Image (cartoon, rainbow, N blue to C red):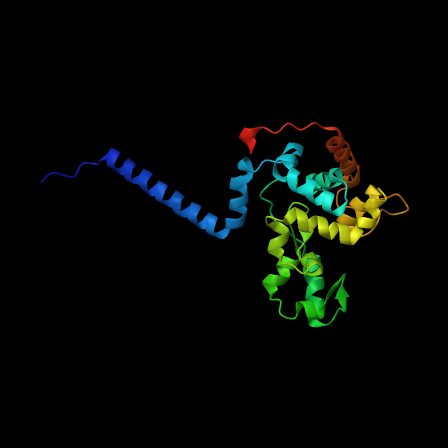
Length: 231
C-alpha cells in the first residue's frame, strides 16, 4: 500500500482560496459596520473640492439666490468654500452638545434652544434629534434651523439647499450683510454671535474669518471659465 504523497501545490492553492474568502468576509463586515465612513471614503477621489468646484457645483444656484435675497454672491461662495469646500457630497457633522440641549428642551428641562421650543420637538425620536443636531449641506446648516424655515432636513441638503440656506442667512443675519459687515456675518454663521468687540474671534478655526474674507476677494476677482468635461 502506497503512502499518500504530500501535494505542496494543492495545499498552497487551498490556502490562497481560504485567504481570499477570509478577506472578502472581512471586507463585508467592515462595510456593514462602517458603511457611512466607507461610503464617504470611497467617494473622496470622486468628490473633489476647492474654489473651482464651488463654481462648478453651486455657482448658478448661488448667483440666483444671491440676486433674489440681495446678498453678495462672493460671500455665499466664500461661505460654501469654508463650510464644505464646494463638494457635491457632504458628510453631516454631529454636534453632541446641541443634541444634549435639544433633549433637555424636549423633556421640558430647558425652555428653548435658540428658536426651538418643546412643542416643536414633542414627536421627535432620538434619531430625529440627532439629525436636528447635525449640520448639513454646502453651508453646513444645523438641522434644527429647518424648523425656523418650516421645511424638512432633506430640503437643506437637497436640490434647493443653496436656496434654503440663503433664505436662512437672510432671515438670521441679512441685516449685517446689507451693511457689508462681513466679519460679523462670518462670525454669526459659525458661532451665532457677531464678531466680538475685543477683536478675538470665537470660531472653531481661528482663521475662519480671515480665510472667508480672502475667499470673497478671490471670487470677486477670479475669472471662471467652465470646462464642459467637468460638468
